[in-house]
Image (cartoon, rainbow, N blue to C red):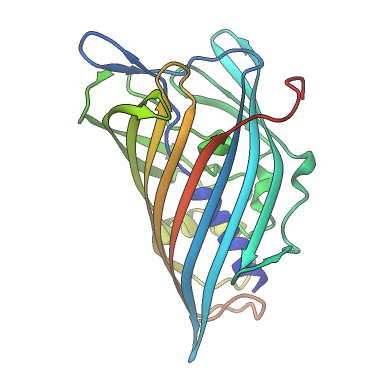
Length: 291
C-alpha cells in the first residue's frame, strides 16, 4: 500500500504536464514566447480527483483519492535572457475515499524550493530540488512533474495560427534517452474573466513499460515488471498580456499491470485502472512579495 500511495502521488504530479506560453499577436499568427519580470509572482491551486479500482488476485479495492496543492512561483532573477524561477509550496493535502490522511511517504514541503533556469522559449537549462517531489517512490527521483513545477515544453521558433499543432519532446532525467512526445494545438483566443486568453490543447502518453525499462537500474531488487499507459489531455488558458496561466482542466486515463517479482513488499499480480480530473487555477497571492 505504501508503494501504491507513492506511485499515485507521483502520477498525479506527472499528469500536470502542459505548456506555459505567451502568444504574442503578429500579422500572420501568434508567436509563442515567455516574458519574464524579476519578482513576478504567481500563486496556483491544483486539485486532482482520481477514481478507479485495484485488483490483486480475487480481491478488488476501490480507489478514490484527491490531492490538493497550493504553490507559488517567483521569478528570482534574469541573466543573459534566462530566468531563474523559484517554486515554493504552501500546502499539500491528500484524501482517500473522502477522508483526509497524512501519508508517511509525503515529505515536509514547507522548506522545499524548486529552482529552474529557462529561456523565453521555455528551454530548460537547469532544475534543482525536484527530487524532493519523488516522495521515496522507487525510480522516480529527479523526475520532471509538470509546468506547475517548472518543467515546460519548448515552443516552435515560428508563428502558429489558430488550428495549428506542434509537437515537443520532453526528456525525463534519470531515464536514459527516454523522451515523451506531447502534441499541442492552439484552439482559439477568448476571454476568461474579462481577460483575453489563448486556449491550448495538450495531449501526451507515458508508456510505463518503457519508463520502467529506462529506470531499471534504479528499481529495488525483486520489483515486478510494470506495463500500462497514462494518457493525458489538457486545456489551458493563458493571459495574452502576461503569459501567465489563468486556468487549466485536464483528464487522465491510467492502466497499470504488475506481474510477479521477488520482493514481498511490492505489489504482486496487480492491475489498476484509474481515471482522473485535474484543475489548475491562478489564485490571489496573499504573501509578501519578498518571500
